[in-house]
Image (tube, rainbow, N blue to C red; front, side, top):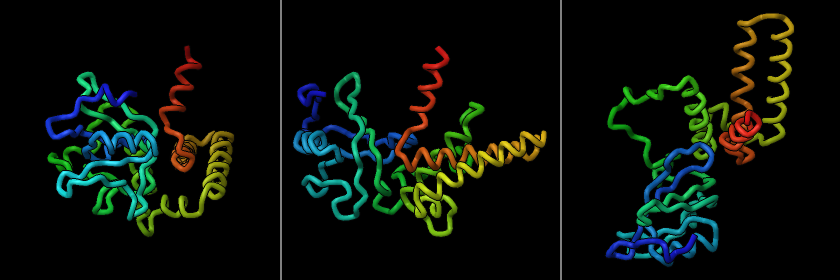
Length: 208
């Protein structure tokens, strides 16, 4: 990526859309000038320009909620940037996982994805949000707090339960155990910072 390709506006700024590289959730919209863009490229962490304070700011400098940059892409007009990141905590100053948590459609907007795998997308986003905000009392929070060994233990246990249910020819039990296995595998992928899309890409390549 060359900074020379970027078209800054009359104020020397370009909008930067920050997206979770794993869950694909849009986290925030901020602005970069040439200096903050250079710092972002050099440090591989997000730097922005505050229009209200008229100064550079490093995301997570005070909160610790930094954003490790995986990739930066500019659009066909070269006047907007998408920043793919691995967040170390909430993106929003309110403590929310994303700044875009409120819907104009309200409850009607929930799970309107028409695909049969919409729940996987939803679950992946929820797991990402749990890791970022670590709400007290949530089981996913408990798994992240205990760490990879606990998560791996649960994956192993659930895989064993799937085997037992299948050997027993019990479809009712099997569907519940497979659901548990899917969930814990998604938690493991999040802990390992491995996007589900990477796994799907392997399946697609093997299919070819």
